[in-house]
Amino acid sequence: MEIFSIVNLISNKKCYERVRQLRWKEGVTCPHCDSKTIKKNGHDITQKDCQHYQCKTCQRYFDDLTNTVFAGHHQPLKIWITCLYFMGLNLSNNQIAKELNLHKSDVHNMVNTLRSGVIKRKPEVLLKGEVEFDEMYLVAGHKGNPEAIKKSGAKK
Ligand SMILES: [Zn+2]
Image (cartoon, rainbow, N blue to C red; front, side):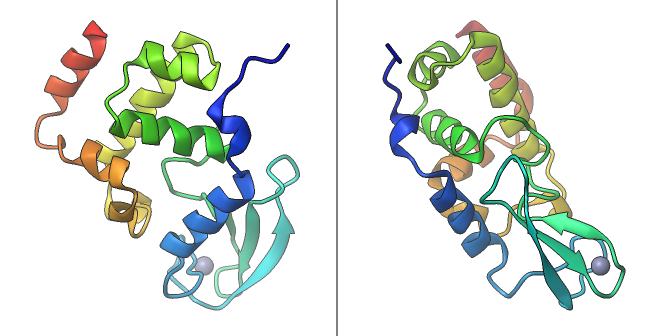
């Protein structure tokens, strides 16, 4: 029997919709050259809710997650969003692993990625409007002291 996880009730499609809403508030913009002259270029093969684009100015390709902290991972976006949410609730890595039905080491890597993504972010990797992800904002609140987070995280 499958172990119940709240993630089963969350829609990946809605997660992408939310990211698009936040990220492309002023229209889809090429992360390579900032052009707004873009065309849609189908959907991702494995993440079917992820919209692909091609820039008509520089001809390069990108998608909804390009240059965000969520890019380039094999876990579905909803897993990342839910992990971020649990982090905002101050759940330990062990609790998150249990809730997401994932291995502890996977969660450990995800949490580190999310934290470093928020802390070491540059303007171009920033998910636009991320403050609206309350939980991300909480994590960003520690950005003045990343070492303290690493230490407290290690004890959990
Ligand atoms: Zn471009």
